[in-house]
Length: 553
View 1 (tube, rainbow, N blue to C red):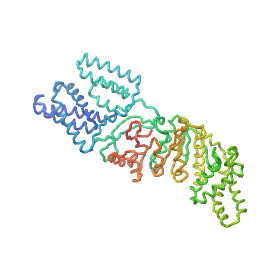
View 2: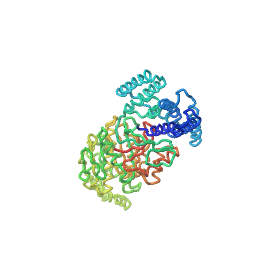
View 3: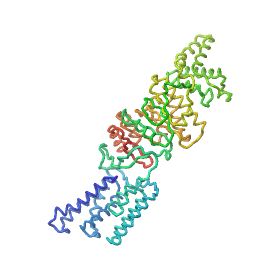
View 4: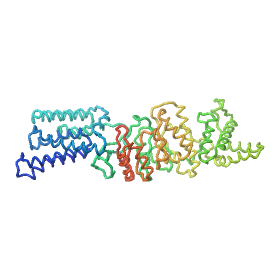
């Protein structure tokens, strides 16, 4: 059973019906003592049902389930309606105090109705119809109970909606397991997408918790067993953010998505830990020219490169403008001009060409002020005028057409690593505009995302990629130990997966992001995040609109 609450409740109900008779075995069944015992039991059952299931509708259906049990146990005649009195009293008390304590009324079953996504399955229909035929034979011809038959017919209809073919035998139980079948509404059995793990809990308002993770809140993790699928095609974009502390299982989750997803991918592997089936490139052995135009004008590309260098070395605004102008002049030296698009396909300059141009300009300057401007840029250009940034030893556009892992583990200088990453990301952005709109075709994984997002140019570039990549068929998986750097990207993200987090500020942000404005939900998530074991994930299932606890495969 996926909902252990229902099994526990039914066991309590049966005990409550049997114990008064066993304890008071010397008294007749219709004595005041036995009746009072059953009265108290049913009163408590009604309160307990509302606490466990958070639904007045489910609790009312359980009244019919209890009637069925009483009839089966032969305690009293089915039409002895006085059973309604203690149960209805208990339910009224529970609802009254529930509304006072919660200050509002939420019905879990009504909420689940909003999540119905009916997809009729042939095997589900066939199995359910078979058990319905058996139920008709049993309850109409053998047991002769129209009420039980009605319960089985309703169970049959619920199974058609929920799609849970494994629950088909419950049709024979009529009303007894009907509340359980109601709890399956909104969680279709036939899912599509990438299965990345198993849902082991759903955050619900309840006094009953079936998880080892304590929330100290009115909301508890209620045990639930179901595969968890992410369906990128059904969301507003293809972007995913994974946050969690060191060793929490972030990279493992990303690899899980990549291995199970039927799409091409490109991985920026900062530490050399992605052992997936793809072509692997040792970035320390290749050369990339950041001054490649990627279909842009010389002025635009010069501004982007100057801004990138500013972000790495903390250049001033005037230095950035001077650097941009020098790069434009370097394009001109190669015959590439702003007002002539035909020249944009010519081989671009590299940083050695820019350095040589600086040397020329030093010989031509007439004032110390102009000389100082050139000399202030010279150390940075000299640093970048290495073999790493000479020419493109790989075709950057080829990275789009197949599966690649870019291994940065042997690139020891952070500035060089950053220039290579941003240059490749710029080429991807340019490819998007050149190739045009498309269905989903490529997932790009960036591990240690703060390495990029901590730089101004990298942050702006990633914001642009996250905002625009959807229509061009690209998605991103960003992995970060810190929430701080990914905050601006979250509005353009379909899934945020939170693993174990211990920093109070970051726990606070994630709890509000996933939990919304409800203070009880916030408290439950806040108390759960630092207790998560490796591989456990808290996220909001957008399609079901539920906060779930997932164990990654």
